[in-house]
Length: 266
Ligand SMILES: NC(=O)C1=CN([C@@H]2O[C@H](COP(=O)(O)OP(=O)(O)OC[C@H]3O[C@@H](n4cnc5c(N)ncnc54)[C@H](OP(=O)(O)O)[C@@H]3O)[C@@H](O)[C@H]2O)C=CC1
Ligand SMILES: O=C(O)C1=N[C@H](C(=O)O)C[C@H](O)C1
Image (cartoon, protein in one colour):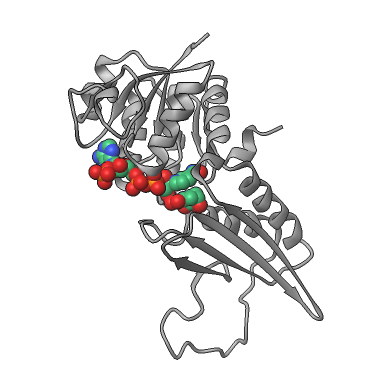
C-alpha cells in the first residue's frame, strides 16, 4: 500500500526525474506534489519528459508545504535552494531526505538543531549509491593503516559544486581515524595555482569535470613500496534510487538529523 506521501523538489532534473520513476514503481511511496521553478499549477503528467503521474507542481515552497499533506520532502535541486527547502520543510513538519550537495558545515549544523528541536527525522546523504557508501567506509578503514591519501572525484560537466559532496564526506570520515597531517614535501610549491587540488585537513581532493561521466571516485593510498586504490563508479542515476527509497522509509522512524546513508544501513 502506498503509505508515505512524498514531495519531490527538482522533478525535471537528472536525479529528480529518476526519483519520480522510482516513486511511480514503489509499493510504499506516493507522489503528492512537486516543487519546481517552472510549470507551477500544472500536473506532472502534463510535462512531456516526466512520468504520467497525478501530482500538482508548485513554484512556491511555502505554498506547497502549507497546502499539501506530505510526510517527506525529497530534495534534488541546488545547494542554495536545497538548504532553503530543507529548512522550510522542517518548519512545516515535513521530514527532509536531501540528496542535494554543497551545503556549508554551518548550514548542516543549523538544520541538525532545527530537526532536533522539532523531533523530526532528516536524512542528508551526499551519496545514495550503496556502493559509494561502502567505498567511503572502506576508505575510512584503510586510512587507519595508510595515512597518506588523496581523493580523485570525477563527474559530468554540469555539476555545480566542487569538490563533490561524496569527496568532502570521504575526507571527513578519514579525518576521524587518522592524525592530522600535511602531505607531500613540506616545501612543495604550486607553480600553477590549484595543481595540488583542494585541501581538507591535509587530504588533497582533485575534481575532474568531463562530458560523458556520471559520478566516479578513487581514493588512493600510498606507503613505501605499495599503493591501494578504492574506486566506485555510478554509470547511471538509477544507481542512487534504492538508497533514496530506503532513506524515505527510514526517515519516518528517526527523530533527528543523520548525515550519510551509512547511518541507516544495517
Ligand atoms: N546524494 C546523491 O546520491 C546524489 C546527489 N546529487 C545532487 O543532487 C543535486 C541535483 O543533481 P542533478 O539532478 O544532477 O542536477 P540537475 O541540474 O539535473 O537538476 C536540478 C534541478 O533542480 C531544479 N531547480 C533549481 N532551482 C530550483 C528551485 N528553486 N526549486 C525547484 N527546483 C529547482 C533545476 O531546474 P532547471 O532545470 O530549471 O535548472 C533542475 O531541474 C545536486 O546537488 C547533485 O550534487 C546528484 C546525484 C546523486
Ligand atoms: O552531482 C552529481 O552528479 C553527484 N553528486 C553527489 C556528490 O556531490 O557527491 C553524488 C554523486 O557523486 C553524484
